[in-house]
Image 1: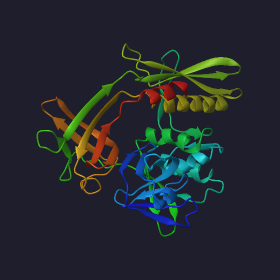
Image 2 (image 1 turned 180 degrees about the vertical axis):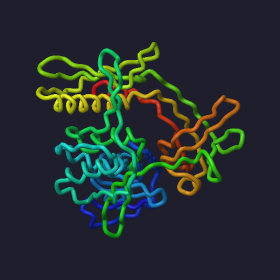
Image 3 (image 1 turned 90 degrees about the vertical axis):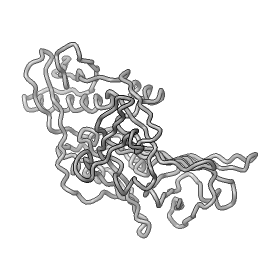
Image 4 (image 1 turned 30 degrees about the horizontal axis):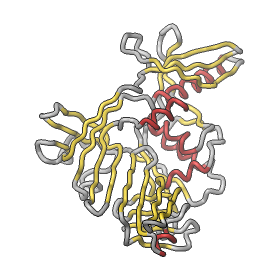
Length: 357
């Protein structure tokens, strides 16, 4: 069922008449929704920019950000993003050091809400993942671990996302319909590749229909050169470098500069390396597998973010990968749930955004 809440949360609408519905949810990215419905009185009132849309079956909450009324065809189309995008109404203004990712990200959110009372963070569960990056100087000497980084600058949600990526953690929104409250929760997907709860998607066993295999390394870099300044002069440290022919080096102008004591030098170097590591995490070797699944399996046998096995003798596929996204579509012809395992290949627009940023 699709329930819509007015922006001021004073009214609730139940959508019973839609032409089509498409929802995408991610383990650690902003999801999307598109609704097309008849332009009747109820739908025009419900599908307004700023309203919240809740899918009670998949437990997904979205914020409507764009609507279009077609008066010729008497249709209304509404688009939105998953509700955690509300965090981007704030900037990451506080300089917060993150070591333990769960605790640090929650701290970064709570110290930057500044009156954004509709959203709160979940209680700390004690996830052990800590920020990690590895630094080497220009000569390729001994490596040094960087175990903390500061988050400051950018829109708030954009600023914390790389930290979750660093720890292979996901995020989700929990909607409390009674108290009208949004809870932002960090979680870690379950490894379901072994034991009695093992999950295998197999073309031969009929558990992996409509398999699409997509591979792309056009935006892949495996190490980065972190450029920064010290005492007015240029400085550089490498992140993740192997010092062999397989290296694909990414230049990252970190914008970090400083001068002073040896302690300050170490601090600034750590900042530069952390920024380069965050940027490098966007340039992965992308291989994804899309498959249609039985609708009832998601939430019962596995969840978004779980690690599962995908196998196909015919196509030479046998790997373990995380369920990184799901797509639900409904129209006059069919109702379908798809999942994506691994890193999805970028669209042209996403590639341009990476280059610009």
